[in-house]
Length: 438
Image 1 (cartoon, one colour):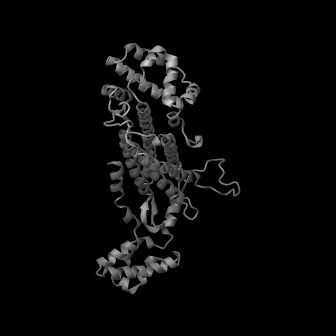
Image 2: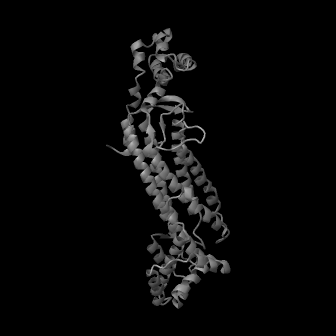
């Protein structure tokens, strides 16, 4: 975890104190259930909760010192708790194995992290909708292969991103549901020494569902799906970031990141205003995606359990969640403050002499009786002259002067084919699909 790219609420989920707090809750809830079943004295559960009610400080350094001797983190934690609680603590961890604590804790952390990420996406969706509605009818050029294609509106561009992040939200909700499972099933998942009702109790207390078959660990296909989902969301963020970066290029400059008073773009060149936030988002997206492959490789563990997944998850779980949380918040700020230049959009739209209307002419010629092949050749012949003039020539004027074209379409009919508003007649339909009926 890099502090520069982290936010407090998400980072707090992954501290040692937070982890040990969840471990305690798992152990205390399990002891509570065991007491209800008559396996351990009720006094044992009461003693744990009575100590916890004092809001004790978790002494991470003391636990670490014990682990330096035991070489086992869960045993070190249990030893430290026993030192605080006293004799009754001996009834903790009855019939349980370390993975019952570790995997259930990770499920809690990932579920809580997912809640924050879902809220982050909601914030980004709100920003995208507001800006999409603001620029619903702002004409701009659509590009394919980076080349002028046909007119769109800037609002439609943003609506497309909104639809994508709606899917991101749904994927995160599904990933949260899949990861939020509890395993309190004992050494190889047979419940030989711990009643399944203990697992059900702990799951209910922590807002989890029970894992149907946990061997000794929760199956890692769940985690693979979770981190793969984070990778997909990160890729969507990168697509948004790359769009802004391209629009901010000097030759385009249709939109740019907000440049605050006192901000500097370059140590050498005072004129620079660089898309540093969206470049950063591209880099962060690469990192989140980088955690997906290790998560996929964690699925294939030996038999009922090995710990080859453990070291991996100590890296990827906090880092992926913290990084994506930061990236989503950064993207929201970029969208909210994005500076949009409608006049520049219109100039860019018009700079190629009307080439963006070529398809309408092609279709009109076929409707007038020419073959598609002949229609295409006639339009392309004139369009290439405009292209090679870098927009200095007018496609409309060339077509009106072309005897083969004018034989099929009158000057007035040709002029009507260059109506910009024609391309926007279904904007309301698309907006209704994305945002719902007005």
